[in-house]
Amino acid sequence: MSSIEIVSGPWGTASMPAEAQRTRALAAWDAFRDLAGRVDLDAPSRLPGWDGRAVITHLASWPEAPLLARLLAEASGRRAPDAAPMHQDEVNARLVPAHRDADREELLAALDDGRARLVAAFDATTEDPSLALARTGSQVGPVPLLTQLGAIAYELAVHALDLAPCGAGEPPPELLDAGVLALADITGALAARHGVRARAGLAVPGGGWGFAAPGAAGTGWEVFPLPPGRPNLPAVEASAAALLLDASAGRRAVPTLLARRDLKPHNLPGLLSLAPLLDHVPGLPGGPALRLTAAALGGVGRMTALLPTLTRTRP
Image 1 (cartoon, one colour):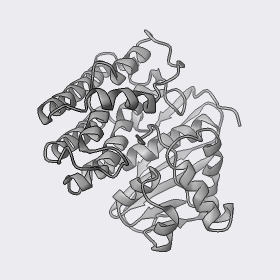
Image 2 (cartoon, one colour):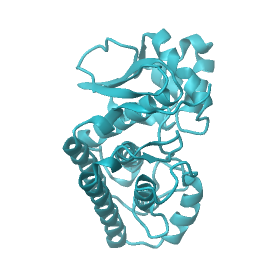
Image 3 (cartoon, one colour):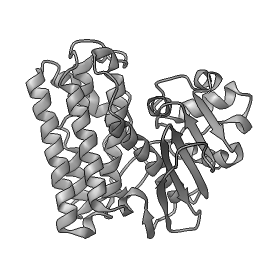
Image 4 (cartoon, one colour):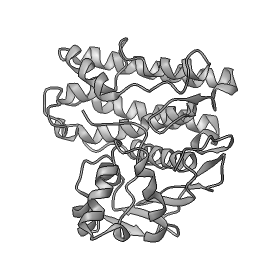
């Protein structure tokens, strides 16, 4: 299946009211910073070989890894959006050792710099509205700048959960909700890019988020909130938002979550429409878990949909 150039919206979260997008993104960033301010930096995180300091370093803003500067350069036409995005594994290999001696004050300052850059990016889209939907390169292909800014919340949420052994405590609901929304949004973008007709949801207690892609050439995708209760569309339902995020990032064994009914698939035939997407982004979190689930349950007809995501979160 070849990718399709998306020429008309809607554009998922990028078509939502600008102020709502800004408020959600900054609230997610602030929530992560609050966690970072109280964790034991030297304690092991959930990620093998990474302590709390390494997790925070990975998400902070450093001169040698200017992600938001790159995105703005692409959106403004100063850099080609089809250029290969940074490989996060390679960035981590340089970034984490370079700042292994950073103290809390330095780490929080670097997080504050990241927040300031995020504010500047939103300000730029307000001053020049054409930047909001301008294409920027990602691991799932070109997507609007605002899609990228919102997707940062997924990585913040997953890494906040990674800091639990360091004393971070439970991430606040607004951070987890922003992470689930980002997961739904980028999966809708991926479906639209590859012409997959799909309508599915990520259901959690209290609601969740859904997405829809019409499958027509050149059209975009929608995202929408799910009401509380049993989802009335193909969906993966989780007993907690944290479990859904963990499963999507490969942090927890999917067959175990299914056996315990912490994950419940609804309308399996509808969910299977998403399976072809894994062939296009084989290296992203969620793909291996989806294939493992298929094998564990006896074939493709019993798969749940663990959704590909915009950013890699493994060390």
